[in-house]
Length: 133
Image 1: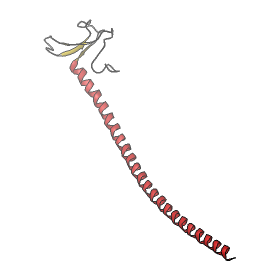
Image 2: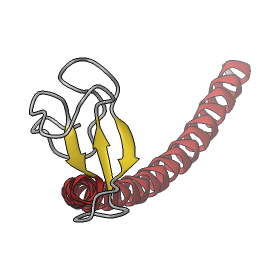
Image 3: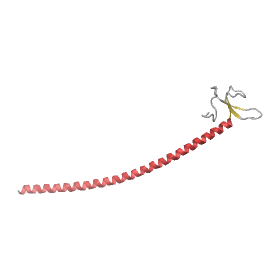
Image 4: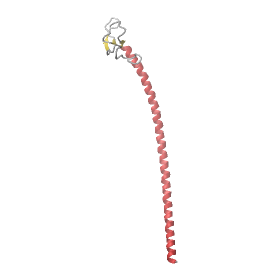
């Protein structure tokens, strides 16, 4: 039974487990109800509740829960989409950075080759002057 006494009762006020029974009265023949095994007709202390009323309350409460879940689901879907977009942007930024770094590496390699060539030329000049003088 819910916080407000709604839904299908499980435990009676006396602590006994509630059972489902079938009415055999002229007014409610075959109608299902939940009651305490110790309760008697007209007994206000022990639990008694018609099953159709209990099930209707359970369904009403379930509708609220489903609507909440649907709202949460839409919110999480929006957040997921935002995260996916951010990941795509980061991947694109990463590719741009990789291209820039690759270009800079190539430029550094070219500068290194140029420095090697200059160094070779200087060594050749030094050797040339060393043998001449």
